[in-house]
Length: 477
Image (cartoon, rainbow, N blue to C red):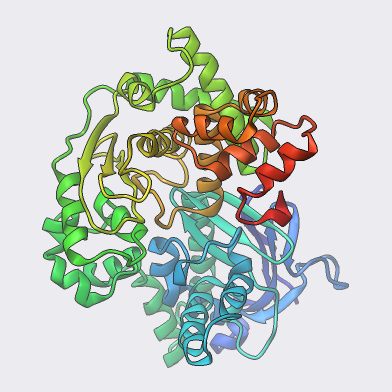
């Protein structure tokens, strides 16, 4: 017997089709009560199940109390954890193990064994397939990215609104839990309790998950209320929590405290109308452009902003600090010894929008490097505040790969348009001198070389060989 089909979720995102194989009245134990067919879909493609030969019901049959127990246990990780272990930045969550194995090729075996535990832990909390006990099914990874969530399989990865995806998971869990109500066995009682208390975790534990910082580091930084500005008795992701997460454990406690103090002293701007207007237009244009590759989006946004700036009577070469000032974004300075951190930016409900430049950063310690740093942050301010980075960003921190690639292309194109770079270098009597002169824009020789190469015009052999010599991976040039 197959009961009525239950459907929920979004047809463009995570969607579930479920039907039970036994009537509720004839299900005396959790295994039979929750046995049924499920088809789990990503958009219009199937991840689990598919049409079976039994009249068209969803095709993956299992005892779904396993999935309820899994969701109840890993819920805080789905809700609060962002980014990847080991500082990895795969294109999508389903590629995490491939990225890790690439990293492990040159590491000693003892180190690999330690890091394997971290990857295994990530998979155990983000792959729905880990809920199955005794069966192998395709992996379905779920990972938060700001206000969005990755839903990722080997064949397909999509980004959907975070709240939408979590609502689908909640509905799925509730449907399974309801099948267990009234059963008196220990497993049913434990599964229902775990599901109902899935959000009942200490703020300390949630802060560890949200920041990826060890408990001893959090304790050394001070109280959660004072350090991270958490609401009394509650938990939410604040600008300070987001900044802590994005440091990837790279900074000393002293530097972390300095960053937190800087953010706390930045008030919420009273007027951001110009920035909000530009952001809305940027998002609309990107959505309508059909451009998918991050660097194409970055080039597109920089070209569009350049036209907007001309209407504002700001002519090339653009000064990023003036653009930020026009947008109502304040610029501050900080000195922390970790040179890999060039800037910290915040734009949440309590602080900002603002950019804090590290005066000792490897790029931002010089004026031309600061121009590139600020141009990079302009892109995040325009396009990422409502998506991947709703609260903060740390340049050279743990921002998602695609988001950072887009911002890098944007900064390069804003500071040195590809056609201009091509014209200056190819038509120069000494192309190398031309490259050195163009570095005043704040870009490295390698980025300038790529700007010339990506202009999509033919390069004279001598110029091509010169530019190729500036590139870290010549085989890709």
